Image (tube, rainbow, N blue to C red; front, side, top):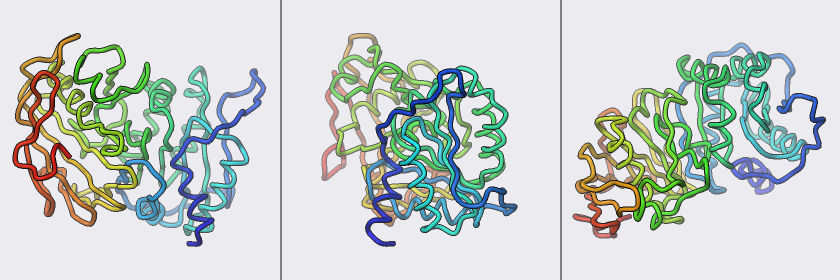
Length: 336
């Protein structure tokens, strides 16, 4: 893959600025397709590509493309302009042996999520990728709509699906929905029930990611503290008896098979957290306190099984939080 093509293909991970200039009376979604107009009739291979954001995700995209088995690849996104999207679609066809590469661009919820044309396009896609951007748009536009059902039907049929950054945030059973704004670790740890700590559930249903919440750009943006808050909230609010987190550093990905095994690709690492003990303090305007969060840190090339929640490589340690301050036990590299 030449460098220009790689840059163009991988730019799909980011948000492109642009004004659609659409007629307000027209539908608020757009469908742009490159390749064959007729859908392929092939059998894809299942799997999940969890991407931590960034511009070096070649292995993850190849994973999704290969599993489409020469079929139709669909990108779902909530920002971008026509020229940008067409260029990405065209470049994907040059890189992957696909029947078509297409993008649906959403700009609102309204009646778009009830449009049977969108449901039909999703139903005929062999592989689906959620672009980065703002995950609150995905939740607002799709939750409790026919689109949500179509996506869950895709997953239940064993077809491949993946997402990067905001697109990864929506793949777990629980997600940080960012409905008001993002939240940083210090603020979250100081006030676990602050207005910006917005969590959601019951969106996508991936059985392998039950009890899981994800996070991205992890070490680069110092997000360990906020992920611990997310886990504490899941337990404190009785959403689940056990809370798990999968966190990926920027330019890292976790390529997950249907049998529960997966490998860390890209630059690594990935972090797999688990706790079942409720926090000792998790309340509005009170700093978080909780103990015994187990962490398994997995470097590039090593494997992890989400069914057994054990890794074949990497190292284990425990995190504790006292009055909003995070400390590590058994780690030679701090909390990360």
